[in-house]
Image (cartoon, rainbow, N blue to C red; front, side, top):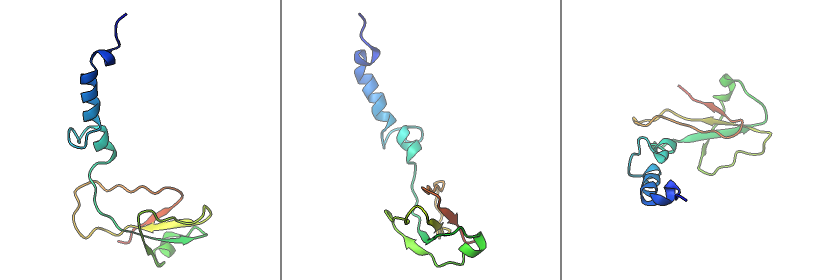
Length: 108
């Protein structure tokens, strides 16, 4: 009975998997590079409300600075987030992930 290719060439397979998740090699096309990419500092501000607000009214509210790990209230409130334009140029593509029914506003 022939051995499975993984067992036969385990060192080659291990090296390929290691490079696929490596923070050093092939970061433009490996799994780590696709998931995390480059990072850019960002600041967010938020406020909570029980009702949905139109954009014009929401941008007039007082936003408080948000920190990593902040909780945005119970499920019946709507968190609104504000992301100001960066004061410096940032080369990575901006990505923002909002979990839940949050609204994101930007002031021009």
